[in-house]
Length: 573
Ligand code: AMP
Image (cartoon, rainbow, N blue to C red; front, side, top):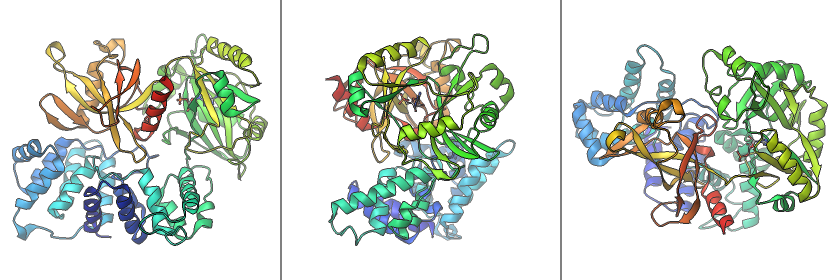
């Protein structure tokens, strides 16, 4: 496919805010071409959400590339940028000025764009800047002014045409099942629509790859339902909802319920295929190299030939052997060097709580009690290496309270309550598993903007605009947070450190305000959620404060949803 055709689609998408219209536009495109390049670029990304590679190009380099390709001085590029507040638009304007004769020396294909963007992510070490510059300007010189606009935005990972998971799912339904559902101006057969939409969603939860889902959908609903788990390929994890009390929890999951310690570690999905062991985070990032200790205990203590396990890795003190809070081990997740040393200094115990596939058999649809039984049969447990999560069957709020207190005493966060007869639902918060915690529920939000401080804080970004996400992945502001960070680096997450993190992500600057690429996820506590006309989400946080940085385990796709904010707002009343 020509890149110009994709840009035509971007243009159409940008020109409407109607959900149905957007769905139709996307459906037309993927009917014609659902290759992974097209599907990913349509969402403004080069890598699927479980791949942690980033294009990772700062706006400085893009300015240089625009200057080089357009023959305009960098100053001019910057001025245009300041004027429009959007480097993409600035590029379009500058390239429109360029004389016609040198334009479109060759026409760009989607494949070529995709190839260059992928190479950007892997340019490293000496000569990387030069290499990135060349890759970008090579694309820009063979692009039309409008193509330059979207290329620039894609490189900056800021495409903004509003294609999220929700619209991709709906578009696949529209593209491949129009007759069955009697799609015309609207949905004819609602039941059929829901059936197909959930088949598409389920296939996506298993594969995390819309291109694959579209290819299956093209071949019909049976093929879609045939989507299978593959050991070695991560699937989305099941999520918990919050119970207000022990009674509420029991009501949601049924009696008797399985109560388990809620450990304060981080989620790991273990894939074992004979001797090949792969570890994924909740964000579906491959962290096998970072945790050779975990790989070793899995190979020693999991007796199954092949399986997929859902686990929580918890840090403990090498001296006292007591559990430590998550922060103590968070640095291991992104670590690239001294891995063996880190494993000794910050050891983890793997707590397995579910099995999703066992020796080639998919267990997603088996009831939880059955899965737990199968799990116990393939684990040879040893404390501070690998164990099954401590579990107790409970029937009364009183029993839950006692177990809850025991769990807190052990250094855990609280309890999980799980429905014994429920299947495993990847990616869903369906209430088969609920959490009981003592504290107010914090939000995980992404920083989308910031403001430079005053006086002695003038070299720091000191106030942060935070956002949640809606079903389509649009980021919606819920407030500004400026407390909770430390003045001194030694004391913990500091303004200086946050400034270091955000500065390379700046997309535009106006006075003291900056806009940043949405990458840094923070946990935010607050006194109350209020309705607010000021922010796009319709809600504002009263007295928000930063608790910690969570980018290691949570990406933009995992931040709190607008639905969730609404739920918490309702629960306050
Ligand atoms: P939250 O992050 O507060 O939504 O709580 C859900 C998380 O708790 C899961 O993603 C797991 O990482 C973690 N967790 C701790 N203990 C358990 C357990 N026994 N079962 C399931 N998840 C657990």
